[in-house]
Length: 465
Picture 1: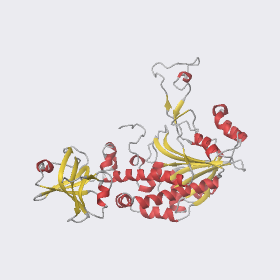
Picture 2 (picture 1 turned 45 degrees about the horizontal axis):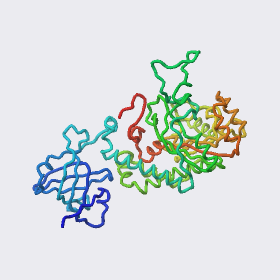
Picture 3 (picture 1 turned 90 degrees about the vertical axis):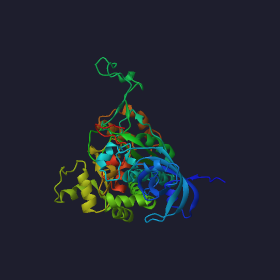
Picture 4 (picture 1 turned 135 degrees about the vertical axis):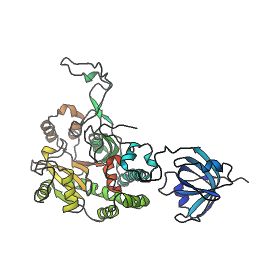
């Protein structure tokens, strides 16, 4: 009777409690070495950081070809899963058949040696096969799952907001235009400007910078919603924290004030860290060993302690009196820079900090004006090592105040009639925030450059792959 070889992931094979007489594994050769009568193959299929050792005997019909296998080659192996005779692994496979699917040669760039993140960015199509980036992208997958789990457990409804939009939510003008107009001979108005009324959507359109405005519309019907998708900023910034295409998690809640908003933001950060600590143990151990030796202690510190809350005014006061020499000036009315945020979290409070009630002049039009007529109900959640990871606010639900805010920001309320309708028809206090997915991933992995937590980064001057 012929054996039926059951396909199994490397991760599942390594976690078996019993041997298996007939299994099939498939993946890529990490290393291969010869002994007297055997060839030892370390096989990885991306399901685990660890490899599965394959024992290929010299009695295999294609043993000569097996001996020529090099790092990066792909194989399908059928055989028996047995307790390992060697150190460092519980199980190994005694191969009965080794099918060579794809060969490689010595030009394969991921040889068994250390590679810098800078080098691996140049081969982003191959870097997921490395230990570090395999771990990063498995954690990215789990983190996305945990985000949905967090909101679904709390009764939020998942919505998809448009990627092509006609509105600039943040009002910063850092937008990628979406157009089908012929750049060589665009239609023009009498004043000489391009006539976007003749464009595909009969108006100017852009890639979204945020799904917030549309999420507000749904929150004013479904009470608690969230969107999780790609967002785009045409910002010419080459820092390690900025990318032009990134993912954002944006909840929006009706009948919720700034305090409730801050509570939820702090809860999700703790929840996500706890989930990854529980479900990505071997990946975090690799990061703690090779990326950031203080990582695990810092993550546990954030989970176990309450977050500090401080007003923007008090934060400026602390920074001004700190005696620290900052590159960027500290003054009331200026935005906090990354160095200021990190001083608050790493040196002063030594824990995550939520800063709230910012001057109205430095925040967008949709934030609710406080009774002091000077500040708005904005909040930023800052974490050690990164700085801002969440930004949000209570939204302005009063029609007259929102229209006044728009005019103050030199916006035409007529362009946002649908948004103002939300305040005309059954308006409610409501709040929401944006959590940068890649920033959260950087914090959880200790990886310091945003380009290394995105599969194919989009940054100024770079749109390869």
